[in-house]
Image (cartoon, rainbow, N blue to C red):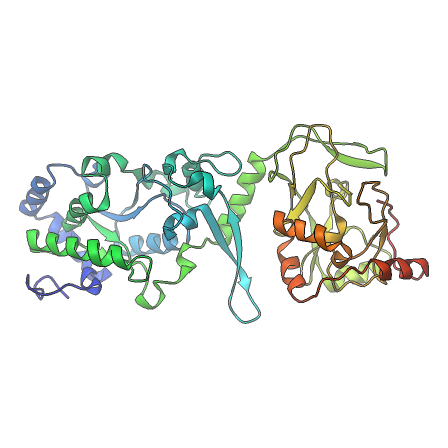
Length: 457
């Protein structure tokens, strides 16, 4: 509905808020060039206009923290189409509340990792803050699980992907505070900015989480501003109505996940030492104290298919210990350094995601870093194909290693609690009923017809 079609006595609904992109593209410049209109808005705002909007109209996205999720990418595309410089206004003095979906998805990030068997999205989640300790704290005061400032962390995610937009992120906490501090106080002046100083890109939702805010605050305030100026604030939808409740917009592209992993590895880069273990050749030892949950190493190497992996093993060109399974039919042939991490039935480290080694507990400097090899062996791999004699000499030593189902139930449950399972393994275990297959492993091993590891860990 256009400005001229709307009568002051008509009822507004949420769809009346929006202006089509092409209309807003022309209308914003007509209004900007109307000096009398700008004076009227300036007077109403008591000259309280964000500095970044004073010299030219802007394409505005207002978020608690600017973060390069799918919504932000879509917004940048729309800003380009409307030919206005994109500016993201932040509210960093706001407090973290996990029941707020926007804030929740800043604290726990989701990445699309392909398509599942039923054509649904396969998601990879990454928790970046401790929700309990962050609840009720100012966003600017929160730290990530690895010690970075929460806000700086999200801004750093832009690097290498959206470098040119880093300077387009403005904290307007002072403006918000000056104009009342809460949405019910500042929203009237906020909407007034979009009479002639910019175009707001936003979707006001009417789902169960946002309905009260939209109906009780947004719509009445929008109508009031319209009545004051006789013009609608220029608000353009970011995504279409049929998709506006899709959580896809709060998820992140793969490039951002790569940035995240690189940032964590750099931050969590710890001193590791390779030296004699005293039990089974060389091992990897902590060169400094390591905190529980800290990333220790990304186990890297050549990525090959299941078919190629099998071909190399049966041709005698590949030690069966070297491949690390990371998906149903994908393996990594570990490089020399990651192959040096030894096994223990009572390990200090575990694997998560595809190949991220992390501390299961606090590890003291000088302590050997080990993980449970069996936790990486698919439950479909029979003892005829792989077993390993174990001499870790821990209190819980299993003597012989097999696939993940040979791990005692209590210990496997503990790994699950700690998040020490690779993503593909979580799916693999859903298809299996856990049982202790140790007896079968030992019997087959004794027959000497096992494709057995040469190592004794």
